[in-house]
Length: 89
Image (cartoon, rainbow, N blue to C red; front, side, top):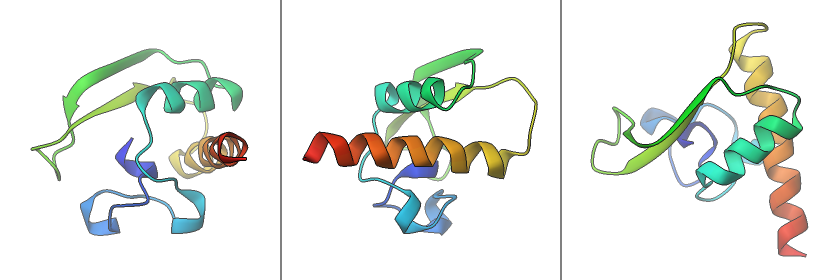
């Protein structure tokens, strides 16, 4: 989830540009966006800690290998941003 968190600096774990991120994504949002991007989730966990922020519980999803990580992150971020934009309207 920290890959898509707009509140974080890149040094703290954000992997994409600010325009491709949202504020405080939840694991449910991440799972929904991953599925709507066309990926099948192999595993997910919600009570883990990201190494760069050990004091905050975060979550993750595991996807099967296929394409590059950057392509996958960009597709998921498109879905996250569009879903969040629909919610705020």
